[in-house]
Amino acid sequence: MNLFAYAFMQNAFMASTFIAITTGIVGVFVVARNMSFLAHTLSEVGFAGAAFAVFAGIRPLDGMLLFTAISSISVGRMSVQASRREAPISAVSSLFIGLGILFLSLSSANASYATTILFGSIIGISQGDVWQLVALAAGVLFTLYFGYRRLAFDSFGSAAQGLKSKYISIYFLLILAVSVSIGAQIVGSLLVFILLTLPPNVAKYLGKTLPQMIVISVVTALIGVWSGLYLGFLTNWPVTFFIAAIEFGFYFLALWYHQKTN
Image (cartoon, rainbow, N blue to C red; front, side, top):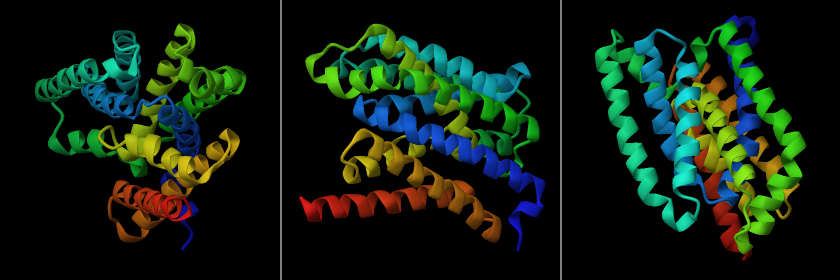
């Protein structure tokens, strides 16, 4: 059975490849900077943004980008120190979940559309959506190429001394917002943190250097999304389920290996 004989599978694999690479790389820095909770919150903010987009009659991805970008910087500025992040992040999360429900109730969207926002629908992605996702992912990767050394030092080097640059932090929050928005196209706004946290945590247990961690994280994310798409196509089960199960399996095996060897 040739999956690539179908245009929608070609679109799905192209979009998922760029998304996995982006979230795999960005996720390493999310874990290093102890921002996993923020990534989870931004996924809920993305739900509100997509719901607002439906209400306003624009693309859901555009609404996600708008809401996540604004909220990521706002939360980041309210919680510069890790010890002070939990309260503002929880408050923002609660607010945006409520806003998402409000926008959906005010729009004409049905329950199936709300499910698509929450859990993703990569199989039904259009060619135009694919190119938008590819452009956004390429933009993130382009800026990471030039800002890699500074971001790496800020995340792994100066973090212990409390010398994080304000501008680097804002830059990272913006690329995190974009990564959340495009990653939600695969697994939905509710579970996008899967791709931003599980592959990099696998890399944390297996990699010894930052380049090794990035490679392991990206490969783990790619295997998860490619396998998820293939199994979803064969079984007609949700792609998100397979991606979540596969990434959890990788994490469990990496954690077991880490405990056995340390």
